[in-house]
Length: 397
Image 1 (cartoon, rainbow, N blue to C red):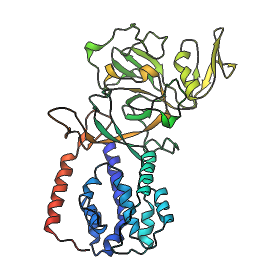
Image 2: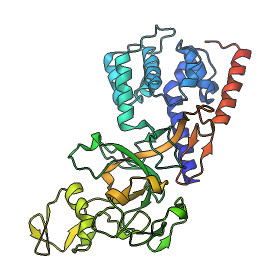
Image 3: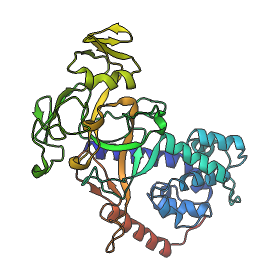
Image 4: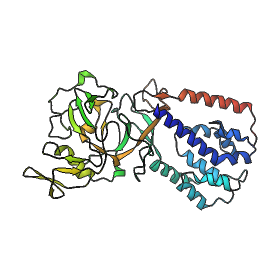
């Protein structure tokens, strides 16, 4: 329910910003101000004001971000004294500058449309980098929550823009589905150039996690919310599986740990038993040197039995656990590798002879559980009704 409230609040905020930034356009064109607050219908009217095809109003509700910057540039071009400086401010504020223009600058009716492809591309790139970005699911590691061919929209604002690591407005919770940069690589690749992965976060900073016979235990309590594994595929205890992290443990994908997931500010008690699990944390993610000589642990060339942790860490797991490359194979995820939160599936493609699009998955909200909320049929009905209304009513401007 909390997720639904957050989405509702986000939609309301967007609608308020849109109204503040465009209401003068409606008034100057002789249109009732009430029209500016009617969802979808107000976009159709705006397309008429901007001399754009009405079908653009439908495309704007499909997550193809390229149309959003063109729309913003169309709007700014009908304001009086629109300059390159104004367009640059539009870019820097990601569209917010329209509010200032709408309130303070004179609007010219029927001004010739002149959108810049260059500014549109730059604007789109800024949005993809800092706000929201489309992704596609290429592997079945999250089956059945997410399927191969699902096209997602991922918010980079929820957990803080990771390039800038701005403050987040949502904390990561157990069982949240997270997009992150692949952590444990052998090459020193810049963070922004690493591959993107998507898994379910089952372990938070400060948790003690263990997997016993395919069941997840958090702080000694069975986690029933994690999608369960098929029993016939469970590996027996004490059967060593190749590539399990760390390699010196007698663990496998169905029997793992227990492990402690460090949080920022922790003092880890290090010994020869657990140092193999925390070595990547110390060396790769926190850039300290680590050596073991004569059964003693040297960190930054000093003998240490404790280590101060500088970041929060997370344990990720794929829902399709028999076919998932996750934290069982490459360890913990540091917070600075977190990219964002998947919001919804806007398209789902199935390459088969009988069906091409999974209509029941389109425009479904992704939440921390396996169930999805479906809105495609509601939106289709609304579009049909508005289309019927537009044919019956003459629009004046």
